[in-house]
Length: 304
Image (cartoon, rainbow, N blue to C red; front, side, top):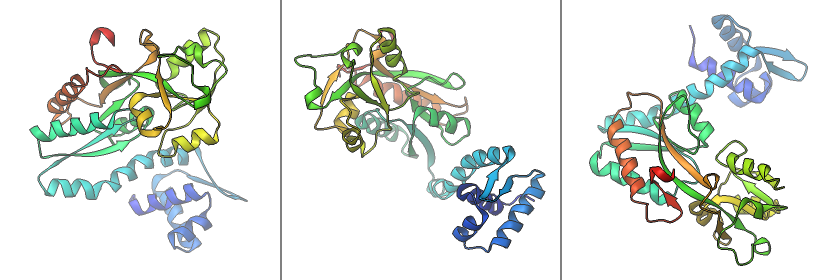
C-alpha cells in the first residue's frame, strides 16, 4: 500500500542527495529511512535510487516521481486552506499572476468579484507564465493571467501593456520621448525571462542586427540591487512594474507602432467546468475595459 509518509521520505532523499543527510533532516536513523525507501520501491515495483560512493542518484523513474511529487505535495499543503474556506461556506479560487500585471488592476478585479460573489476567496500564486502552465495542467491553479498564450489550454486575450526600458542615469537616451530596439545597441539590458514575453523583441533586435548584451533575471524586491550589482544600463519592463521595482529610474516607452513593443496578458484555464467561470471571466473583461484611459495600456481588439 502506497503511503504519503514514504513519498515524503523519498522527496527528502531526492532533495539532499544522500540517505544519511536526509535521515538527519527527518530525525530518523539511517537504517530506518533505508527500510522505508526499500519498501516504497517494492510497493511501486521500480528502483528509484541508485547508491553511489558520494550519496544517491535518482534513476529515470525516480526523477519522474520526484517531478510528479512537486504537484502532489503542493496540493497536500493547501488542504488546511481549502477546508477552512469550505467550512465558512466559501469557494477557494487559486489564481496565478505573473509579474508585470498592475497591482491596482488585480485589486480592482478582486473587488469586482467580491461585489457579486462574496463567497469566493482567492489564493493568489505569483509565478511565471511557464510555471503557471505546469500548474494549470496539474490542477494546482484554477485560473491564470499569462503573458504567453498556452495552446493546450483555454485562453482569452484580455489586454496589452506597452513595454519600455528604465535607464541608469548615465545611459538615458537624451531628449527621446520614446525609443526603438535599435537604441539599445551596445547596452547591457536586463530582461525578466529568456523564454517569456520579450522573445519577439529580442528577435526584432537580431533581425536589425542590433547587438544587445541581454541579462535574464526574475524581477523581485531585490531587482534594483540585482541591476546595480550586474552593472546593467537598462531594464526591459512595463510601466507598472517599473514604478514598483525601479522608482528612482527613468522609464522610456518603446514606440507604440510595433507589435513586439507590447506585452500581452491572457486569461487561461484548464477546463470548461471552471466553477463560477462565467462570473470570473466577465469580471476580468470588465476590469480590463476600465483601464482603457491609460496610454500605456490597451484592450481594443483591433490593436491587439
